Image (tube, rainbow, N blue to C red; front, side, top):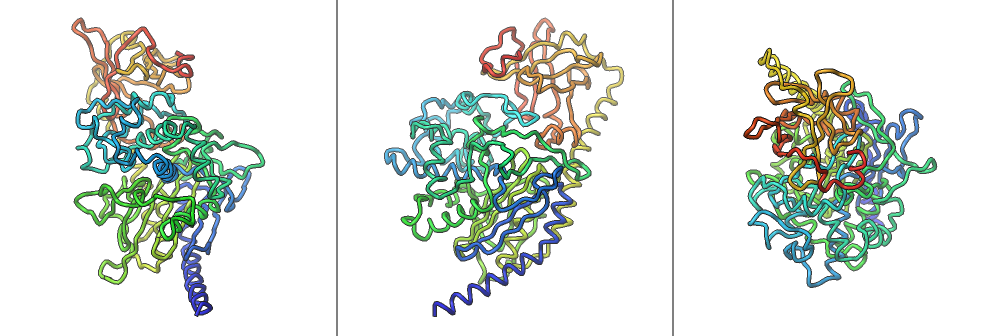
Length: 553
């Protein structure tokens, strides 16, 4: 009987491999369209590795191919590791639970919103149901640079704007996993990266998975790229911006396909026999705590570092593609009329500076896979590839044309930025002869209410009649600030300008507009900027800018 079972398993695995090989040409084409130099894929079924494929080049210039041991940035796949580490930590601290008020664990957190005081918990933050804005503008700017120090996590999170009712909506927020890192440090007495290594990575034998990678000529690391409009790529600087940053525990992990398959096996085994793996107490991670969309709960729910859903259904709802399409435009995988096929699906997506990724688990068949790529792409190729693999793994039919979807995502992303640029120029043309005040009247250092973030405005070094905007007063964060009308200026960037500076693509006009406000004597005293229209006040003192940033102020 055992031999027959093994034969059946081998036949099923062979059939899966055939289906995966059949879709490889589509996967290659998606990478080409999206501006993705390399993709590494690994699949397990019935707990065993059955498929590994590496596509393209980890280093375009040297034409080096990736392997299953090539290191990629994981982006938000980091969140699953962090949540798992916290699960181990809470198990060892029985007086602290997922629902303990965060203030009781981490007194540095002092929420300004009355509904959060004494109520908001780790569970709320890690399931993205706080209702708080996840805006990262004050922390992350261009050229892969975090411009605030980790010491600013508590004051910033304490003052995040409310964007939705508490515990009523799923609102993705990376700050929650910065909080998780601080809680790990508080409870363990160790740096978060060290505790995660000791509690998760070392026990699982994940020797090539780390929050503290190093570049070395002997290390098999995928270089990071950004895709330009024509799908050519710009190689990004060889550095690890997340290392030691305030978002290290939100997106700073690096790993390989081989290590990630071990991780998948351990996660699946933890559901079958928690005592047989170092990963215990993970039930809350995989349980849905907030629907992604209350009007369509079939889209799934968010746990902690994982989305819980079922196939047949729609996937990829956490990533870039879901921002470019209406959710009912996205592919439906499988036949909803088949009542005999319902597959529990757990997944997460990652988007980092130069790397996009996806991980999927299917506990009922002990299956899973990972997709790692090395570009900030025109379309989220890792997501399309993951959807294709999910369908092939389970033999689900889909009528989706993924090549056309990748093309359409590319058109929409580039088109959205072009439309923004055109609208800004149209606004300028509608105000002919509308001159600004003398430019010197706008110049100065403008600080937020906390005093930890500054926008310096100064005369452009080269161009007369143009201002320059410097985030945190840093020479590495300078942008041309052009008059639009009245006391409003703009610093809009084309798609390629954003890509070349390793910026996540933005097409919101409000993000690129700066409005100057006056006091009762008509002096410019306030600068209003960003999607949240944050007000910064001019000051002659540098307040609480950290030492690293203030050296250039």
